[in-house]
Length: 143
Picture 1 (cartoon, rainbow, N blue to C red):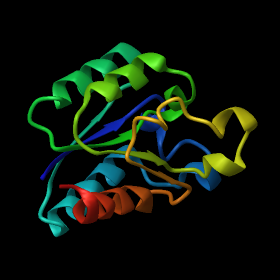
Picture 2 (cartoon, one colour):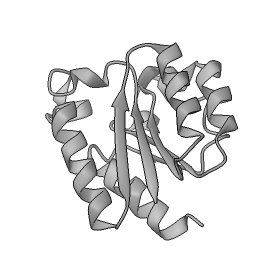
Picture 3 (cartoon, rainbow, N blue to C red):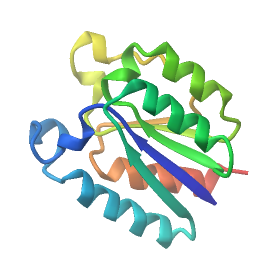
């Protein structure tokens, strides 16, 4: 199974952001772990990150060919980007939404995501382990 992992706005600043919310792992360290977790489950992973909403949409469009599943963490875009939501709706495979912090226990505006109705599963508040959980979910539930 080929899984594309798309990280969004400000996730390149992991390791510099509030460690209580986001942990102390850098994006490079997180991506290294993701590749390891995917390999353990006999999957292939491809990771990308951008701070540009249109580029994120383009990455989703590119994933529509040759990718079996998506793991997405759009960051703050999760809460208001209907462009990203609409792009995700085009993807025909399973999509797992991941948030490092527990968005249900944060500010009111973070508790809802506009992508919730187009994803197969959401994982929130598990830090980097949320990505491992996403791959495990895909291994157990993807066709």
